[in-house]
Length: 170
Image (cartoon, rainbow, N blue to C red; front, side, top):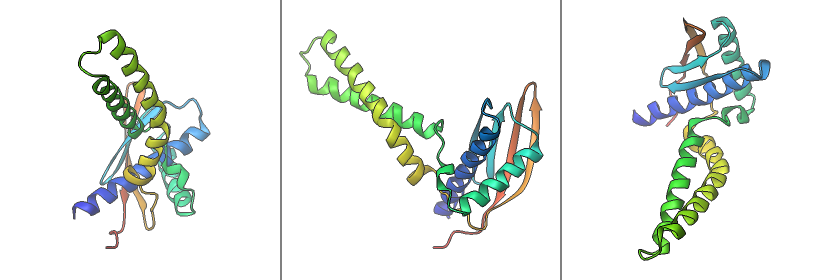
């Protein structure tokens, strides 16, 4: 049961990314983000109308099913932020620990900063790997968009794209 819930979120996360990438390809200046749930995904920002979002989500499903798995990976995903923070922080702490207690702060600080920068550089491929293998699933076989709920708040639009997925096979 829990694994089914996680798999639905991963699939919706992939659909969120693919939908955003399709919308961004049509309007490169698009400023938007999203968040996946077990029942669909939210898109927030300077977005088009709900019908356009629904059409992009349906196309995203088709393209993922056709093997365009790269659409499930998004360069501005929060997974990348987590990877950057975790690697940078861990490497900075490791450099401080390895320098020893008696090392003056003015030696530890530049070492920690250099280690954090190395962590930030390593985070790019690590975040991409994490998206591909942990936080998204491009397996959208049988998925469909049920409906899109839209709400405008000032200049921002929020859409909830409600999805339906067949149960995962055990």
